[in-house]
Structure formats: C-alpha cells, structure tokens
Image: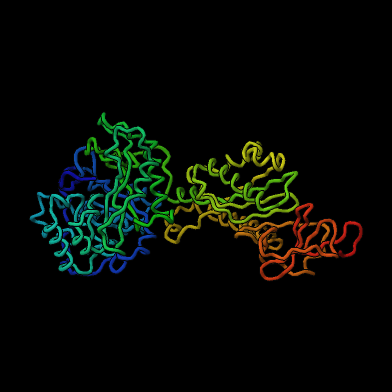
Amino acid sequence: MRYYTTAPVTTPTGSPVTTPTGAPVITPKSVFGTDNVGKYSFWKSYRSICFSVAGGSNSPGDYGGNHARIQDGLNKVVSNGYNMVRTWGTGAWSDLVCEHIISNSLDIKLQAGIWIDNANKGRYQAEFDSAMVSVMRYSELYLGVSIGNEQEYSIGVPKLLEMVQYMKQKYPHVPVTYNFLQNTLNDPDFAPVFAAMDYVNVNVYPGYFGNLANNAWTPTVQLNALKAYNPTEVPNGMPIVLGETGWQSSSPDTQRTIPSTKYLIEYYSLATHYLYGETDNTVFASGFYFNLADENWKGADDGWGLYLQGDQNAVGAAKGTIPTVFEILEAAKPVMVKVQVEFPNIDCEQAALDLLEQKVKVALASSASVSKDTIKLTDMCCKSGVMTLNYNVPMGAGSASGFTSTVQDQPAEVLGSEITSSYGVPKTTAIQSSVAMEPTASSQESQTNSMSGSLVAAIVGTVAVVILFAAVAVWCWRNRIRKDDRNYMVEDPNVIPKDQTKPILELVEKGDSGRDSKKSSSLSKGWLTLQDDEGEEYYWNSETGDVSFQKPRTSDSNILI
C-alpha cells in the first residue's frame, strides 16, 4: 500500500522526535542480513508482518513517539508468531522500535524502508544517508534496506538504477531491495534494476482491486491467483519476498462490496499457510502480511489491519478471533486417517481393493474440502475380509471428524452401491489422528510459558501416534504381498507356519501371460501352484480366490497336501 505523505514523526504533544545527540559517524559495515538474504533457505525461518503502528487518524506519524503503543505493537507481533517487521521510514521512530526490541530481548528483525517518490527523488542521497545512520546504529537487527515502495514508474528506470548503484557503492555490505508493484516483475525494462539488487520485494494483491464489486471474488479465489503469480524478469536464484498482500475488513467507499472481517481472517489464514506451510510455494522465499493495525488517516484505503487502530497507549482490539501463525500451520497439517472396512463377501482381490480405495478417497476429499489428488494412500492391507487403508489428508479448512462420523454411521451411502452390490453392506470404523508440529527454537523462545504444557502434551501425543501407526505398518508388512507400491495380504487358517516357507516379494496376477500355471498332483480342492518373476512358487485357490505364500494343508487332517 502506498503512503501518500512523508510527514515528520511527532510525539503526542506535537514536538518533533529528534535523533539522539552524539550520533556516531556512519561507518559502512555489514548488517544481520549481509551474506544471508541472497539465499532462499535463509528466509524460510522468517515470518513477517508490516508494522506501521505510528499511523493514526490524521497522518502516518500521529503515534510515532509513544513508547507504550510501540511496545504493545511489538508484543502483538510476537504473540501472533512473527519474527520480522517491515517499516516505510527509517529514522527516529524506527530507532525507538529497535530500542524496545533490544531492551525486551525480542526475537524480531527488521527490513528498513526509505520513502522515495517523484517529489523527493532528486534528494535521494540525503534521504539514504540519513536513514543509514539508524541502520548502522542497530545493524544487528536489520536484514536489508528497501529504498522505495510502489513508486518505480514515477521515478523511472534510470533514476532507480542510479539509486541502487549509490547504495551499493557507499554501503557495499548492506543488502538492497525495493518493494515493486506486482506487474513490474514482468516488465523487461526493469530487468537491470532487479539484477543489481540483493533480493526483490513485490507487493501482490492479485485481482483484488479489479474485483471490488464482484461478490464471487473470495479469499480462496484470490489465494489461487496468488499461487499463479509468475514473475519472469527476476534473475534465476534471486529470492523474491512477498512485500505485501492482504484483504480489507471495511472501507467507507460504497463501491467496495467485498471487504469483510470474515474474509480478512480467511485470506490471512490461507496466505499464511501458503507462505510458510506449503511445499508447492516455489515463488516466494518468505512474505509480509499487510497489515498489523488499521491507520484511519488512509481513508478508503484503510481496513487492512488484523487489529483496529487503537490510541496512543495501545494498538486496538483484534478483528475477531485471529489465529497465530503456529495455529494456522498446525490446523493445516496433514492428518493421518486410518479406515477399516469389513465386508461379508470380500475376496481381497486387487480389483476390490482399488475400487474401495478410490471410494474412500472421494469421501475423504469431500469431507476435508480438498482435491482427492492431494490425498495420499500410505498403506493398504486385507485380512479375513477386513480391509485397512491408511491415508495422509491435507485437511486445510476442513476436518476429518465429519468423514469419521459419516462413514461410521452410513458406510453404505459413503462407499456407494458399486461396492455394496458386489461385496455386501460393510461394517466400518474410521480412526483419525494428527501429529503435532514441533516448533523451531526461535518460535519456542517467543511463546509464553503457558504454551509449555501444551507442547509437552503434543510431543507425548506425537510419540503415541507414531508408535500406533508403526505397529500397524509392521503388522501389515510382516503379512504382505506387494502390488503396485500398495500392500494387501490374505491369510488362510489352513497353512503351515510362515517361517517354514520363503516369502514372495512380488505377486504376479493370475492369468498373466508367460506365467507357469500347473495343477499339482499333490494339491487338491482348487489350489494351483504359480510362479512369480523370480521363479518362486505361491499358491492360488481357483475356487475361493485365496492366495497363500505358504503350502496349504488339507482341510480334513493336519498333514501337508
């Protein structure tokens, strides 16, 4: 979002905030982000939010000198799971922010912002040098410096490239970036500017402003548009940071029918999970959510904050129930779902297993509100007419509980007539469990003591779940016949002990061409001896459809056939 003024930061009494006397002479040196910001891996540990709590009802500097408000804003940054903030100006106000971070030992880093537009681009050197006094003073907190925000077209490519080169020559160890408009990263005219930077910021509100009166434009639609964002002119390997994205909760502009608190929270949750929790995010190294708090001076462009504006003493109230970053990532973690289905007429053939597996996957996808293609089958077993299927389900905004209760109460309806007509009405149970996320060291430090008990409980629960599923996996593996990377097995009570026979590694379907099939003179009651690709024998009963890798006994006596 653009800041339309560069009004000086003032205290509540109206007197300007001045830089402390005795400021050190600028000595070009490295900052925290030096040698780091150019690596995608470095950004993965940072969760970031835009921090403009100095803004009030009249200007972006109304609350700039109020310590209580700064401290409250930083507390909300930490409590929501963030460890990096972005500013639009660097000087006296950002110095206060740094002082509060240091004095309270907060795990927060900053991206410095410098406001340059067409009006002050002629004096950019003085603006840069003034801001760098603060960056050098608190160099251990800064990842880099953004030398502007969304003004690249009014400044022009030649001047912008000149600005980048000035920073690189005078402050060679300080990473330089810029917050570009979303379409700029596809403009080849700016390619030389991108190449001269250490990393790139881009503000992306995909489709939002073009759909302000379109009620079909939902947070999910906007997230999909964000996922489809495809910058083409940034050099390969250069980190791209999402400089802003968000959703308004309200606006005095009557043409804007989309803004709502419900949609703001929903988009915030979806975007947060996409940035920090999804492996298919291949564009953004990290990102800043816009914004921590409202700023009423912005008029129709207000309403982006997770919190209301508040007053000189504190940021305002939360706009509803705002989940933390950790809560969002935990709620969206894949859930392990185990499904057991007992049929009266099942024969454990592959066709039956495949059909059942697809039906259960469709039911899970519907319950979890996700695509069935995202649900992964991890194991499948069949024993004595009971099928066991294990899945990983990316629950997202859905829940496994709906599937669990439905498939238990109405298994025939869930699995469909195609199943029940062939194999009878099933008896079904479904068990679901989630493995808790283990927070990183930095996130553990930022959590309150009240979370310690929850973390211990989560770890204990995780161990229990792992042991449970390991036991199931071992049971299935010890009795398995492998087929197409899925396991199914058949056990017949009239077989000799397993340890007296060789296990078969790969089952060959009966009827495959080129396979030896013979009626053994020593076998009876429909048993056939077959061979797999390695020449190992196994046994198939043509009357019952049973398969055994152990030599069958007769049903009338306890002697081997």
